[in-house]
Length: 173
Image (cartoon, rainbow, N blue to C red):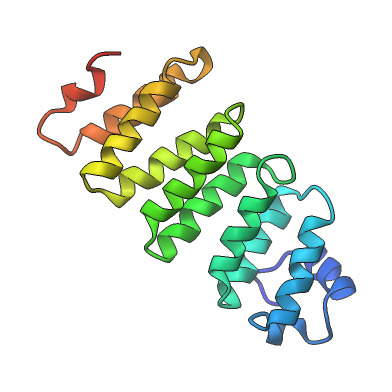
């Protein structure tokens, strides 16, 4: 058993995927079956991580991103799924696109602030004036929510620490 896959996931995949699926992870048929299993019901933290890993190992990183987006929110642990989305977008060097995709999800599901926090994280990683301005605006909006104030403020400070004026993080809240 390859060390990257937990035994319980190996058993689950063996039941649902075609014979020799590990050698065929990059093939469309194998990935379609992975999608069917993922969409069948709520996923655990381990299943979510395994899905992303199988996507990367099978050369299907973009498909893993799209599938995780379809599962958000509700069918996957949000913190795990959004963290994986940040990582997968980074692997493709598409932080700005990933941030914008998460921003769309957050606009659709404003009661799930982790989507907004991770969108801001990706936009900040992407750099550029427009992305940084959007991350700033998003974090300032999230800082108005009592339960997120401290987290959003910490991320605003991190956004401006590398710049010449870190005090900008506190203008005007």
